[in-house]
Image 1 (cartoon, one colour):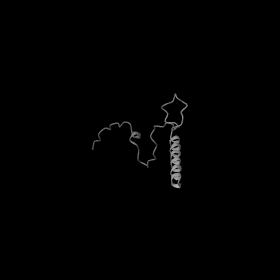
Image 2 (image 1 turned 180 degrees about the horizontal axis):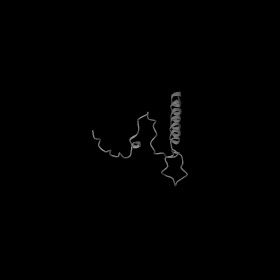
Image 3 (image 1 turned 120 degrees about the horizontal axis):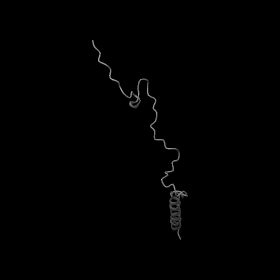
Image 4 (image 1 turned 45 degrees about the vertical axis):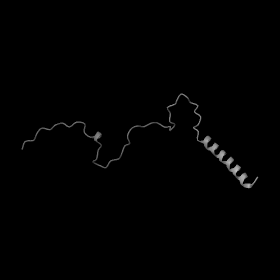
Length: 77
């Protein structure tokens, strides 16, 4: 056999092994807990409250403003 044939066989074997290892490494890990299928695995506590942003003085959020405005009596001049 010539060296070219041997090189092609060795490259083919290396290619097959590389594909095998890539395929086995990309599989998701075996999940032992079958009761919790909705878990996306990110962990932690879910916090859906909006973040508190530090606003400059005199600026307020619309939700923090006055709840009701009492009508004032008209002023006579």
